[in-house]
Length: 260
Image (cartoon, rainbow, N blue to C red):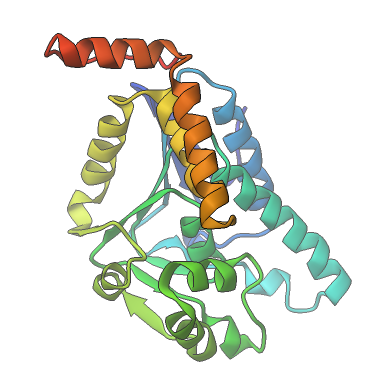
């Protein structure tokens, strides 16, 4: 399938998704959200892809936010329909059975930061900038940022970022636990690809189980989350990858996983 606002290539098990609206700093609208949803659904069903990298076109922005020009005159009812499309897309990325790495190459603001937070891991360029500046437009974040920030960095810091709309640099995002690694701009895709290859060397089944357990468990009580861990741990022992992994360990060699 071809896409107007996305670039997509896959190689050696890695799917690279690039939001391609550099003239608008890769801003999101309903058409872009719909394309991202369709592409990630295609990736979900593609056994040739084991890890995904999401990035933005150009050097200025990962995704600078939502296209304000297209939403400024909408009513609350119209915005609810727009948010439904955006949430469906974010949920598709968040629940993908395969790891998703955000390679943040510039501004990740508003809906752009929310898109990055839907990914499993975030590698940020030193020139990356993060923020939820909605408050300065007379609105609040609508794509899950308020809840996810509070759960990730605590109430005080989440409220600070949302209430002030301040934009923070990559180093502060790293210190706050919002990104996994900060690298020079010229090394961003090399680092993201190296991480993707590292994940590809693991069991795809185990990675999928781990992602489901962590994502679902954070919304549960500790006891319920541990029950979920136990369930997925036991399910691993019905997979070929568990047999291969333990056999390889005992034979002192690298495992050859089949993701089954």
